[in-house]
Image 1 (cartoon, rainbow, N blue to C red):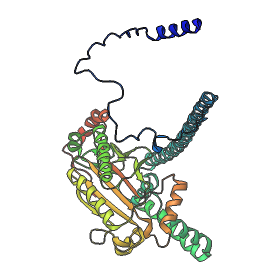
Image 2: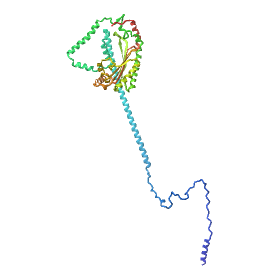
Image 3: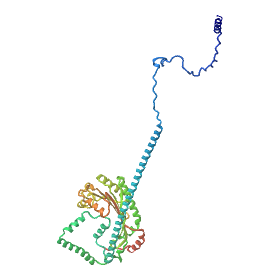
Image 4: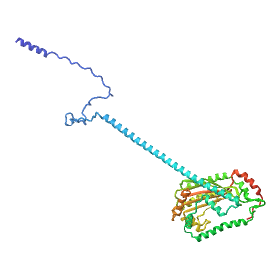
Length: 438
């Protein structure tokens, strides 16, 4: 009993022990009024679901397993492949450019070889032509020294046609071939009689003429250095041959430029300038020369009457500015000195609208005699094909291009500067002398 009471007394004493005062935490320092407040704001947010509601429990999306441990390796490989493709494309482009450059070089070399070959052929032809003309001139001079005659005017015109760069007349060869093929013995006999008359009549006339037909006032006019009587002063006052050639070359360049203003063409210089000595009116050698420019060609087709007339008008304007008198179309019946039949035969029609060839001629006699010729060939009007055939034949045998336009210029009565002293000396005995009559 006593023991139980003691136990109860201990419990009562333990329960009745005064509770210890709780230790209070030091108060937090006061926050400034303008500092932000972190944490959950007081009150509820109407936009958020209430805690514990059905809307607050949202399913969690499963994790995406997109990590590739070889991604960097694959990206590097793709980058390397792209660089290799670009390098291959650049190599192909460089190779194509190299092939194109090589092809261009080969084409230029072939063009240069072709041009050199053509130039060599033209030079050979010009040399052959010059050699033939020289031989003919030597033969004529030898005949002159032997017989004292210079030949007929017709033979002189034939020599000019042969050595002056003119192509032979269309159809002439075919006519001679027909005569040679179908001629009979009466025709041959008649031709022989005509030939004998042609040979004997000049001999008779020459033998019957007085031997002093070239002598007057005690001087032999075969030694006159000019061409015609009383032209010595005019010749000495005129520009020398070198100056005239320079002026003619510049004029041709201006005329080509005038044509280029109307139509785009390419000009080809064929052959070289030619020079030949002239005889005086009494059959003796003079100191005057005839100079013919190279012939300039274009090969671009030209057709249409309006275009051709515009080209003729432009060239005529330049010629008039340089003192040429009355440039005229000799193929036009209104301005030509040819007969209508000759016009149709030479130019392929009776009027300019249907003609194959237009020919413009102009002359200047201010200082020396200058003759200019400009032709336009329109093969679209060649209904028979005769002019095209003649052009192809000339291209084959004379090495002349099949042209659409051509121009050339000839000056006569030129005195070289080196021959001027001799000209004065030789002309002195003929001053105030009367030339032979007839």
